[in-house]
Image (cartoon, rainbow, N blue to C red; front, top):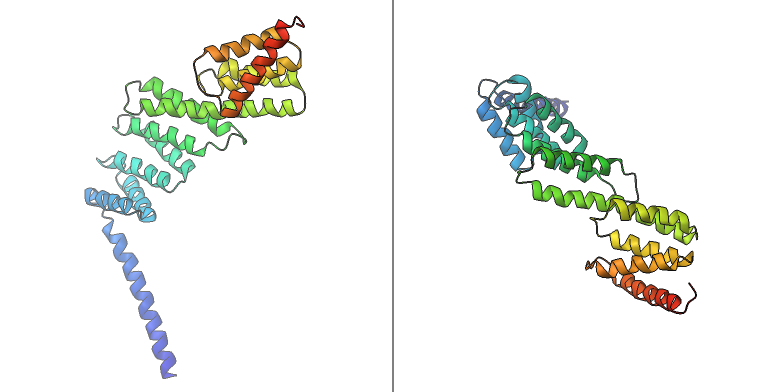
Length: 262
């Protein structure tokens, strides 16, 4: 009985210590010294203690919404979610800063990080394209609103990256139709890449794919023109296998045309 009583006392003591520690921690989040509280939040963030950082920045936002550190706390709360790879929550918090704190020096950075978050959410090209299209929309908006931004060059690179994902999906759809010998349907998708994604590395591959289908359909002159345009473009975007296909198709088309079988 004595042992049980001692054990019970120890348990109560430990619980009391835990509660005291929690209470002590809460007391450090002092609404009367927001500057020090913000520095504590930044310290948590740097140490990757994201839970504590989130709690601290949220405390500042709700206890001093119009204060000097309100926009700082809002931005770094969003950053906390971003670094935790909780991108939808990060986007929501960046949005809150952009909409409610329009004069903040963090707005441009928040806009950029929001676009980056959508890029992170953009899945493999074989999956749905919704997030990729959203990422593109926000990237285009960013470069239009902030043409002189230090992030402009990176934004342009990400635009190409997202566009290549969309082009890749179209290209693979065209190749699927090729395997089914539905060449006219394949050409429709190749044409979409050729017409709408000329700035991507897949442009030449789409032309090559279409040329191959034109050969299968017996449209030799158009196939020759496409192959010539690839060769004259000066771009080296084709894979080694595609280069071999280009040479083989070019030889086949020229031989057929020169033989008078056109």
